[in-house]
Amino acid sequence: SMVVIEEFLDGPEVSVFGVCDGADVVLLRPAPDFKRAYDGDRGPNTGGMGAYCPYPLASRDFEALPGAVFEPVLAELASRGARYAGVLYAGLILTADGPKVLEFNARFGDPETQAVLPRLRSDAYELLAAAARPDGGGLAGVELDFDDNWAVTLVLASAGYPAAPSTGDVICGLADAAREGVEVTHAGTARREDGAIVTAGGRVLNVTALGPTPAAARDAAYAAAAKIGFAGRQLRSDIALRAVGATRA
Image (cartoon, rainbow, N blue to C red; front, side, top):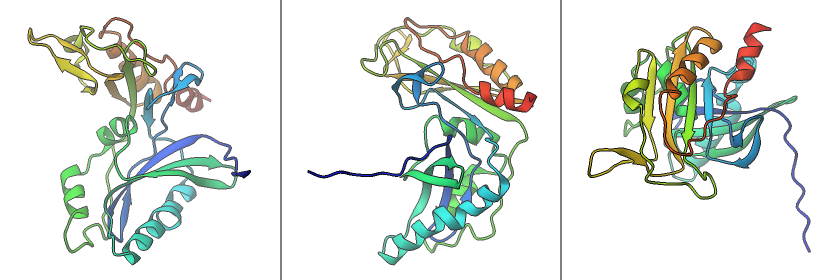
């Protein structure tokens, strides 16, 4: 028999996306995800029930990430003849000894991206085009500009998610939810022949709101989400609540 011993990583989890051109990396702002289905981080794991941005990662830890986490991966890939240009997603655990890598993905992450990109004031197309330059080197010296506002993203999930998501349930209130500073992103939806928008997956919609404080962004997101209804809708009520408490402390 075999015994596998793994290091237990104790601390909050946060996602950081690095846009890479094969050698250089430009980091987007950190955002935590909420994996458990129910309030208080209880229930089964999901693909994510919400996120917020920014996350107060210590400046020294954030500034160390390119050299400690991202650039070694790019260098190793290049040494194998596989120059990587694109988004490298690092799932980090913020331990007492600093950030530790839990996982990598070669993509933007959902739902963190919905909270990160609305705060990006720099041109996202120019950023990605620079990363994709065939000769590489497009990101050398690039610095990004981010909005000072906070962003809070809520996931509206279907009945039965994650075990057995319900589909075909009519979604109401989408037009009512649209307002200044709010984005509603479709994920698991479909349009019926009669024009109705219905559920077509587990995580149905994302509602993202911007605000000058975590409380303002959170209140706006929940107010917009309250306008949207469908049978068996699931929505955690504690997304970004810790961020609100931290800024009020």
